[in-house]
Length: 420
Image (cartoon, rainbow, N blue to C red; front, side, top):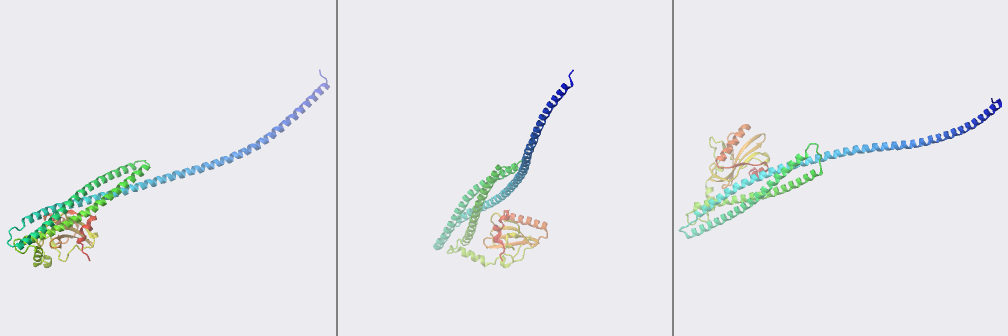
């Protein structure tokens, strides 16, 4: 059994060893504490840096999201704007195509009218040529009369040949104009088809406008501009052709007057060469109806208004409707001698009232005969009935009426307006 001293020594040794262990543990604790403090300080700095980076990234993300929203909105606005612009261009092209179509129809109507006038002129020229051939003096007893008559008929024959040559040239020009009108008609049809296809293609559900639409619209615009230019050229040609026909018609009237004077003086020695003067003298020996102003015949639907020498208006703005004869007709009106004349049926707006006028242009007497209904129309129904009766009367007299388009009112009727 150990003694108390050994136990004391052992306790002392253990106490000393425990002291050393405690001292080492204390040093280790202090070192670990220092390391922990240092680690905590470094972690706080890193955490703060990471927090700053995180906040910067969040701000950057918010900025990018806002820019993305703005870009999407701008793209949507631009797409809507382009769609609206293309839609407007398509509507403009459609209207232009419709106008071009209307102009083409008007040109075709004018061409038909000119064709009818040319056919009538050709028939009248043949009649004149035949009459001149039959009316040449053969066995005149007076040499002077024979020479003068031969010179007069030679002059008329030469004028007739010139008119025939002019008609042939006009016919050739008409053929060229028909070809050009046919080409314009094909071009307009192709343009309308392309416009229709483009419109259906661009209005597809959920479809966005692309660059191809822009190119297609540009191509359609170029085609339309070309068609309009071609139509303008054809209108110029049509006006030239109409002027040439008017000149030929005037020349025909002069030839008819000369032929009539020559037939009246045929067989009278010494009177050839003075036929025109003789006809003028005969026409002035008896006063014309507009100089005598006779009372209207009882029961007539239309009567002459001797106070009017033209339509009582200044411009085509007052003309509501109008019909004109396609070519001249020879007849006798209200006591005037038989002669070629043109006819018009015109509805004018005068204040709040509508009035109907029937107008005849007498070629030989160079007088405009204006007729009005014996009983003015009281309402729209009465006016329409009078229009129908007037058209029926003119058609029975031999006139072929065509409705005058609004765009041609001034050109066709301007010479018949009352100028104050």
